[in-house]
Image (cartoon, rainbow, N blue to C red; front, top):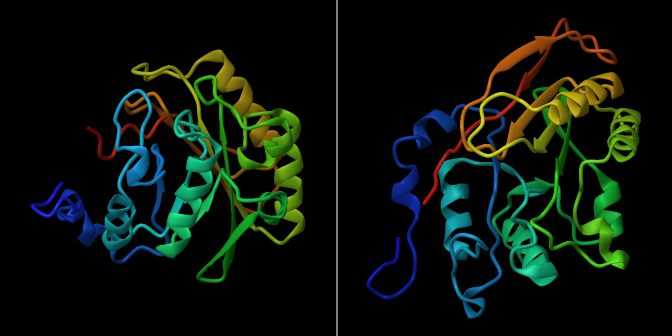
Length: 232
């Protein structure tokens, strides 16, 4: 993606898929990298830092919302986490999972999709050992049953008719869900989730339907792992 003048152009990466996004009401992706700035140095595995132009290309491709809580959220520390959110907002991309402040964390995300109010929540199993300071716990949503129940109750209370929960969990390169994943999903359904989407294993996992407990939908949906979209 690096050009002759040392800038970056990631738009060609999305050329073939862009047409499929254009007619969608909402296009959501899992951003499993940070944008901590050029001065930090661009890096790949195991600690990611990507050029801001990558986010610009995502926007140009038609992505309108990103979930940002995953095991690489803290790859460039708290400053990198915060700057990543700022880059998303500069590109007018909505996000959830990581936050600028406690007020930002508490605001919760509800989108109006053709008259349907959809609440979006996002949690990760961890961040490879690097976590925000105790006074900055608001920055990142970690999988915790009490927190998930509180958030779903709150987002329903704010008018969400549809609750979508994104989890970053499971075992890498293992398609089948673990017992820990099954436990969390079972609890999340009990708390009132309608759609549950998983990432982290980097392979496609199974998908299944369930009976929602708190909405008028005839069936809910869980996709245990969506696999990779684009990767080095």
